[in-house]
Image (cartoon, rainbow, N blue to C red; front, side, top):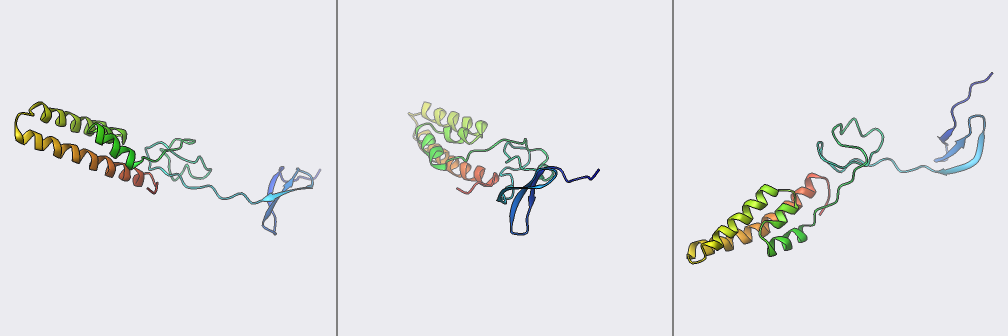
Length: 145
């Protein structure tokens, strides 16, 4: 009894793949599929394309997850309306709450000039931090923004 290779797609000299049914070649062929892409996430974070062979390079990344980019413009606008909100949207909740509490503490002391200036500074700092935080988050996760 002869042993044959298992059924499956096999690379052909012309750069295509052809189906072997386990005993003979069939008429079915297809172009070679593109190679798997690298995960777009750093170890310890969600996201991976689930490609075979990538698990060894990224052992702590759960397979089959994708990550969405953070939009710096949305973070900036959110912080324009509520200081610290954009930073919270970027995942830095403690820092965002600190900005928000600092802003409201300064507004609470509105009758003094220095806290009003500090509130304006915190408001601007919150917007800048949210914008830059979203860009940094995207860079850390391999997303161009």
